Length: 67
Image (cartoon, rainbow, N blue to C red; front, side, top):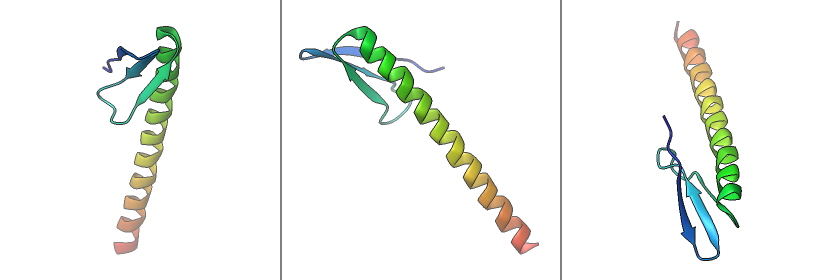
């Protein structure tokens, strides 16, 4: 499960997901900051899945090459 944290940062709001390093967003309102964070989390997870698929594919290629 992922958690969202939100805090006031000057005139804006800072939203972040502590479980995902570097996954932060800002907005003029809480709602905008959270909306941006939802998009950031989705992109983060999509990238992680793609990276894992590429890693798994590369590992499979290595196993085939050594066989």
